[in-house]
Amino acid sequence: MRVTRWLIATACTAVLGIGIATAQTPNIPKRQGTQKARIAHGVRTGALTPREGRHLAKKQRRIHRSIVRDRRDGRGFTARERARAQRRLNQQSRTIYRQEHDRQMR
Image (cartoon, rainbow, N blue to C red; front, side):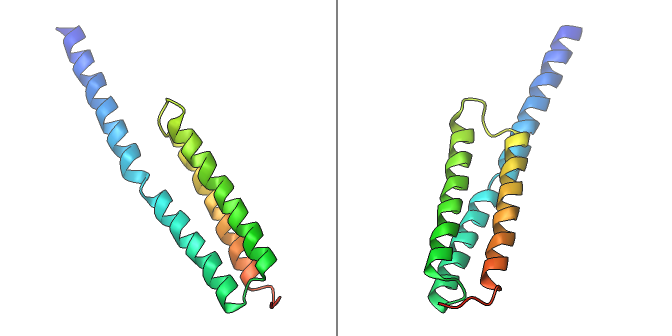
């Protein structure tokens, strides 16, 4: 009886953990798309030089590839990997802002 309760409790915890991880993940692709659009808009308006745009786009691709690699590694997308991705996206967002507002014009 105790073993059965323990198994049920463990299964419920695992299912809830997967649900929470999945619920938090959709934010990342949306942020990546937004940042990609910010880079394109900055180059189009002249707030970013073409070189800055290429550099930021390259860094954005690196972040995307690392996220894809983390998701495919067989363990799923762990909380640690998600936090690392969020930190890298936060850093990239700050870099985009700084580059757009550094008064360099093309």
